[in-house]
Length: 424
Ligand code: PSV
Ligand code: MN
Ligand code: MN
Image 1 (tube, helix red, strand yellow):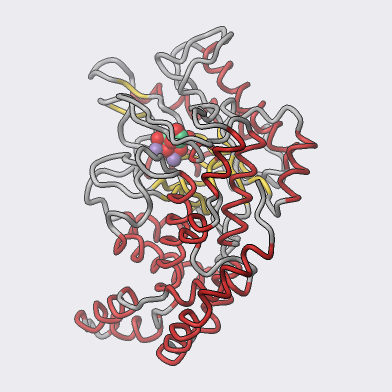
Image 2 (cartoon, rainbow, N blue to C red; image 1 turned 30 degrees about the vertical axis):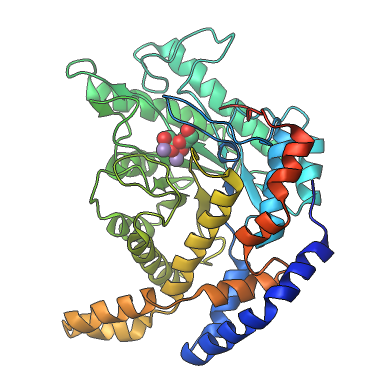
């Protein structure tokens, strides 16, 4: 299914008068409305292929119907999201959940929908059918060199797939760790991981990056070999300039000051980018901005200030991606909400006057500093987002458009009610 231009225009026609009123109001209230709209227009967030179906939990999965049954259908779903919000112009594949065997036709389909391929993700946290050696006790950190070698070769194969698709980065997340004290020698596990990553690093094309993701626990519950940003940063530093640290918002223990981590990684030129989601307890993979939108704003506050300080382009300076799982929501609706939440936080951060904030900081005016941030956070920037979408050819209100156009109903007609997205 593809959306026609006139369907989008018709919907916008109805919503236009109300939008215009709200946009005029905020344009009068905010000094840099025009600049914010332009930056929002340029800003895109990649969609992970594995978030297009219902993920479920380890206790059960309740299929939503009309879910993508193939890589092509996943790309089509991202095409639908992008047609509505004009802010999701790439897809991130997870191999072997996605096997882009026919790279040329997959690439052509994506291009026709205005999409390209973001980072490719390797998977050495599960054993695949016909796999010679098991990852039960880890992959790149394994005590057995031949298991490490198998995992290294998989990562190189993922790079090769990515090269054919035009990706420019490999994301590595390892489940490697231990469940009980004494199970592992931490130094050996770390050294083995480093050596394995060095082999992978050598296989990277010149214009590629490797992003090293960290996570404190799960599936291992005593130690994870790349458990926090320090361990990821250490690996990335030892590997070289092409390596940096990927921040998945859910991969922190409760109350961690993520914005401070982000600020320092950015300062060191080692912030690869994000896996956006939200979390109440652990790696909950909830919709970004649904639990703690103020934290999301504070992260963007550091990003905008830090990227400007380093002269980085906001849209392309680092990787922007969602990593979420849906148990009770329609995956496409959830992804539309996610992109909206990220752009709201970004737009609010663009309202902060960093000169005035710096002045308050230099004068130890704590009250003023807090006030500057919270005034930006409490501004309703949604009309700025809607205006950016409108100018880019998208819809004023993506979730309501998705419903009014009965997109899910059409997908169910096309694909059936009982569908299981591949790879999940
Ligand atoms: C692990 O929890 C993770 O966040 C990694 O990014 C994986 O690649 C992704 O989830 C999918 O399982
Ligand atoms: Mn992740
Ligand atoms: Mn995760």
